[in-house]
Image 1 (cartoon, one colour):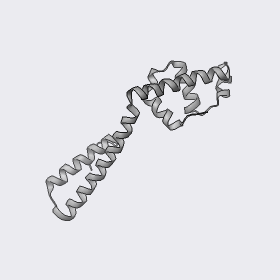
Image 2: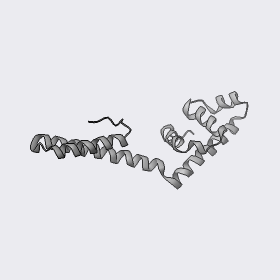
Image 3: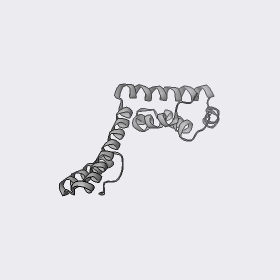
Image 4: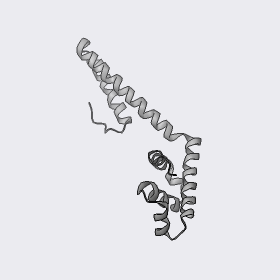
Length: 127
């Protein structure tokens, strides 16, 4: 049974370079291109079980690395925290604009917002 493709894609993005070339290829065919085990085995000239074994080893390697290193979990936490920082900075900007109109508060909140959005993957080009 196929694991969650989104989870597997994230694990592959973080740890895929640790896999063998064959594991990377089969993993990509199975998860990235959504080919069945039978289709891969037919194209590669090996048994369906052979394909399943290679993919299973790849999945286990990726899961094991995540359980040891936790990079995907940390990345998720980082994105969640950056989103909360962005939300708080926007709220500070709004309150400042309505009540205080303080240039220093505005500048610092914009800086926090820009940095938080950079953590979320947005380009760093001002607010």
